[in-house]
Amino acid sequence: MKILVNNEAREVAGPSLADALDELGYGGAVIATAVNGDFAPARSRPALMLREGDRLELLAPMRGG
Amino acid sequence: MEVYGVTLASRLLLGTAQFPSPAILAEAVRRSGAEVVTVSLRRESGTERAGQAFWSLIRDLGVRVLPNTAGCHSAREAITTAQMAREVFETDWIKLEVIGNHDTLQPDVFGLVEAARSLTADGFAVFPYTTEDLVVGERLLDAGCRVLMPWGAPIGSGRGLNNVYGLRAMRAHFPDVPLVIDAGIGLPSQAAQAMELGYDAVLLNTAVARAGEPARMAAAFAQAIAAGREAFLAEPMPPRDMAVPSTPVLGQAFR
Image (tube, rainbow over all chains, first blue to last red; front, side, top):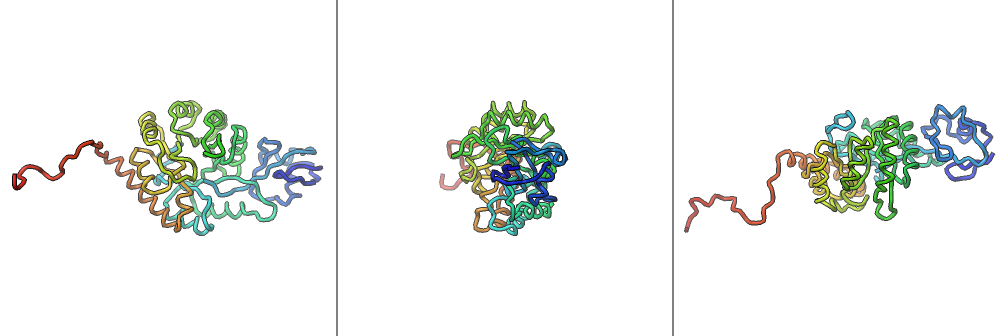
């Protein structure tokens, strides 16, 4: 299915968010996720099924003021 | 200073952005004596994984982190970002920023109060980036905030305290609330001024990160903030309009 990952179109098999993260190479990375603007906690990822056109945000620690 | 049940010996909170290198950032944090540093969340790139290395560096510093919601322009964005930050950084602390204007980076105080209410209900310890407006301060306290962080001047401007009168009024109006000057500080003298007014702490970033020698400037700020705090506790004299001789007049020669 086609989804948007950090606003870039990507093709993933899924079907869960956890599967998609592994597929995208983020398994084990310190990241937080949101789907369609809503926070998706790490514990919810295995059961959270992605759908065509979903907007996935992957955020990581960064410098900040 | 005590905030949300945590006692902090240092009254300098330091941002981690814009430093020339990770090593210089680490040295500046050490020289500043800061026990709290602000951090953020950004989109992770597919190949660089800069975020993982940054987080590893911060953890090694052994300081408490205060994640921010910088760049959020609505309460909803800020709330989602705060929830994501809590999971990644494993802290309930959040520096809440809801930006209302692209040019001034002025807080959207309406969205700020809305987000603060929602986040405190969800168990967050909210540090709101606000203005010196007293009514907004009241609303933020009503929303559950236990600290207020008014701007000194626009973020990154280095202009110091733009509205000393307003900030003095804020200190007087909220005598028991921890108040932190957040944003706009450019020089140690400006940080000292904030402390002399009775502010509890200063949060700054650009003034240190953009200095020619960031670690040295961090140390300078630490000294100025400590001096300003001591001056406040020593109760400064009130200003006078007229000269008053400091040397005794009694026994003066040639009179």
